[in-house]
Image 1 (cartoon, rainbow, N blue to C red):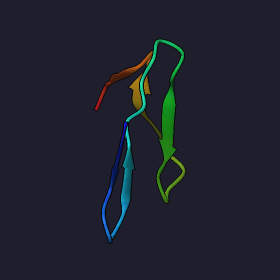
Image 2 (cartoon, rainbow, N blue to C red; image 1 turned 90 degrees about the vertical axis):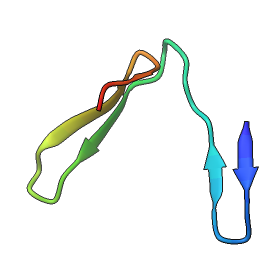
Image 3 (cartoon, one colour; image 1 turned 120 degrees about the vertical axis):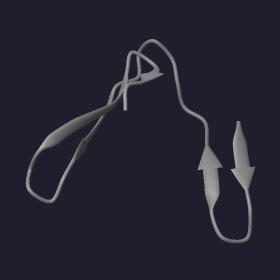
Image 4 (cartoon, one colour; image 1 turned 180 degrees about the vertical axis):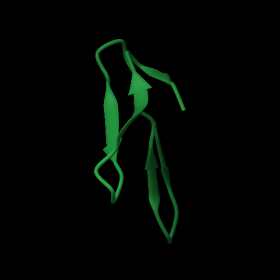
Length: 40
């Protein structure tokens, strides 16, 4: 689904195939989503 406002747009993501990893300014890798589930 999507949530649209005048300031931003939100999208819902998730499935067993989705992995999301962020990288900090210092280069550290942080898993946010693993196999469709938030792990933070």
